Image (cartoon, rainbow, N blue to C red; front, side):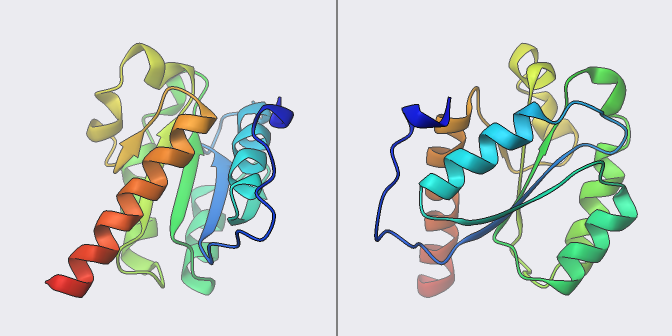
Length: 146
């Protein structure tokens, strides 16, 4: 699947992303795909397997990330997302941390992203890369020009 997103050699963006399945969700295929697409897009990426809220909070407190991407395979795992996102934002080394969410549950109800406190969602990994870059570009322009 990642072969569909060609490697952009020499395009190191300096942007860092952390990907994980939402705490409690056992499906990790989505995080593998999204991490690969972002890495091929020039991002420095990391992925957590079987993340808990406390482990996610610890990571964003210890390291700078421009973006945290959480995937959910079903709505049963979204109940803890608002508190997990709020906790990550409260300790993040990046005061403008972008949180994106994805997975089947957000395909059927894209408005759920806003309800759980995320900044964005996208229907697939390639679109997620585009949305993330647009969102972060807008934040950087906003920071420069007030």
